[in-house]
Image (cartoon, rainbow, N blue to C red; front, side, top):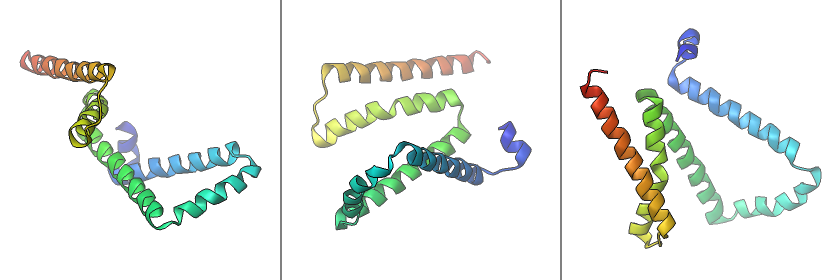
Length: 137
């Protein structure tokens, strides 16, 4: 927040700069990590992207992931980092339960324990937060 205030950058431009720097770093790492001979293995993948349904799904996936990051950035600007982290940790258990409800995916006992533990932790956090607010802190 201090950096944002000192450079007078709004949330949109800050998110854009972070995304731009991340893309440049990822491109640089890709060029360093990929051997030159791997171009022959990348061409069949490039042809597959041009298939009618595959390219569209790749585009939709990219747009929805960008929207998820944008929404996460907006939420982070409005809540504390701990609250954001607790909400983000509940994302996977919610997706597991949604998959079970929508598609009938099986939930193993270990997954059920993880869902219960994440839910109990978030409930405990909210109770402590409410208690701290009532005590005047």
